[in-house]
Image (cartoon, rainbow, N blue to C red; front, side, top):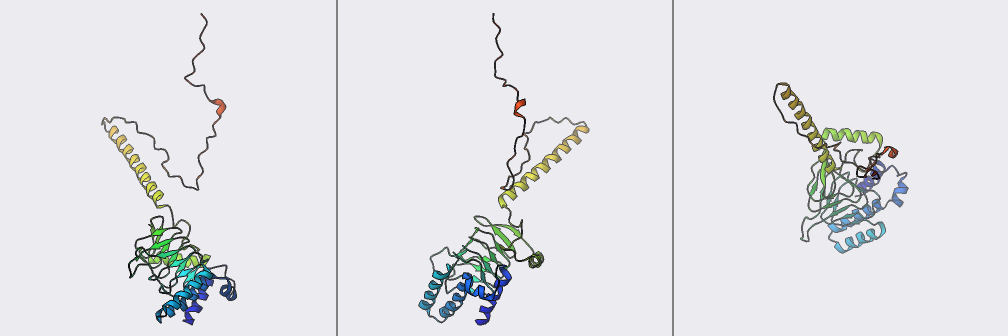
Length: 277
């Protein structure tokens, strides 16, 4: 147990650039304090000292703001950054090298006894405020975006965002190794993904369809011109202009009309002056 406690301590320096010394982590990191208390309370739980283990976990919740049921199984080198508001249920299982941020819930969706909390594979990162609910499995190297609500299984190497959770990216093991090597080169990526890994899935899908429609429209025009050149008579139909057909994101400013208002022509509904009879 003491070897695991030391591993939990040293992994903080790998995942939090703000960590400066062992003394600082031991005295100021509530996530580490909560994990340390869980290691002890979980051992008491296995020894059938259920009330004592629950009392210790409740005390740790008061002191750290992190609630971990003593029955939860947590692997090696587990890290909770910031910690406040994290809830981990009784039947949750967490693999090695996982990272959770503040506000994460690994909760259940049933009142029945038995397995009712999530299982996280190795090297899973769950972003701030995310809710992973039910007896589902998050595959190895999974990434859960901030504030996502996940209620279905997630395959290995997948990135999930949104409410409900949508898989927006699945990388191969080879690509994941490249990402990991690059992350080590530039420093730990706080929420487990690089810029651009978590686009809006709805906007991405609609933009892809609109691009496809534009491509089809261009092909149809080319075909019509080719048929006309061969002597075919094709009626000209006026189609409405679709414009740029792009979903505007929050990063794009609204278009600004900078036309000269002074050149505006008079309204057509104004009556001309009448001549006197």
